[in-house]
Image 1 (cartoon, one colour):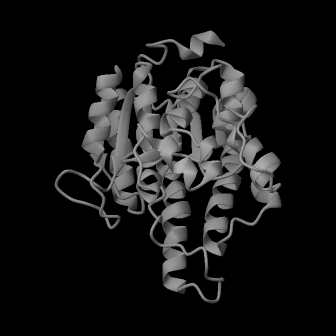
Image 2 (spheres, rainbow, N blue to C red):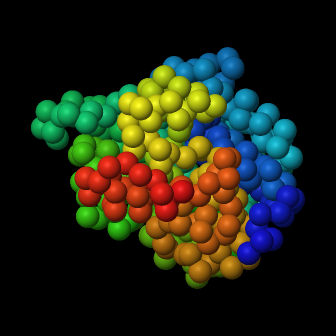
Length: 309
C-alpha cells in the first residue's frame, strides 16, 4: 500500500473538509493537500468574524496551510446548520469542478457546551440540544446536499469523524449523556450512509483519532506541540497522545487507497489505520491510543506506552 503515501497521489481529486478551522479538521485538510488534492475547507471562523467558540484559528489559515503543503486550499465560510449555506457550497464545488471525491464530516463546535459532571436531568436542556444540533444535525445537513455530487461517479469517500470506536463506545459510557449520544450517533451515521452509497460505488466510514493534541488540549495542559511531553508529569497517560496530523494522514491514506471500499461501513481509528497503511505521526511513532486505553488506562495499570507507540 506504499502508493497511498506518495505525494501527488490525490492530484485532480476534490475534497470537502467540513469543520476545518482547527484540530483534526485542519490537519485532515493539510494532509490531503500534501498529496495534491484540492480541498474546500469550511467553518464559521474567518479573519473577519469569529464563531461562538471565539478562538483565533480561521479557515483562511487552514486553506493557506493546505496550499503550502502542495495542494489547493479554498476557504468557504459556512454554518453547517444552515441548509441554504450548505447547498450553495456544494453548488460551488459542482460548478468549479463537477465532482466531489472526498467528504469529511468533522463539524463539532460544542467543546464549551457539555458538562462531564451533570446528569441528563441536571444538564441545561437547551444547551444539551444545541450540542446535538452541532454534532449530529450538521453532519446530516452536509451529507444531504453533498452525497448526490459525491456519488455521481464511483469511488467517492465519506469520513464521519467522531470520538471512540464502535467497539469501545458500545461497551463504555462516555461520561456525559449528550457527549455520549453525539459521538455514538455519528458512528451509526457512517454505517447508514455506507448502506446507501455502497451500491453506488461509494464508501462511508467512521474514524476516530486517539488522545489528540488539539489546540484546546495543548492549552489545557499549558504546553505546545514542541514541548507536549512536559504535560506527562501532570497526566502520565498523555504519553499516548498524538498530533492532529496523525488522523490527517489516516484520511489521506483512505482517500488514496484504490481498494478503500473494503472498509465500507466500518469504524476505524488512526492507530489501526497506521498499522495497515504504514504511515506515522510527525515524530515517527505510531500511537495506538484505543488499544492502550483498554489494556492500560482503563485497566488501572501504570502509564507505559511500550508496545503502543
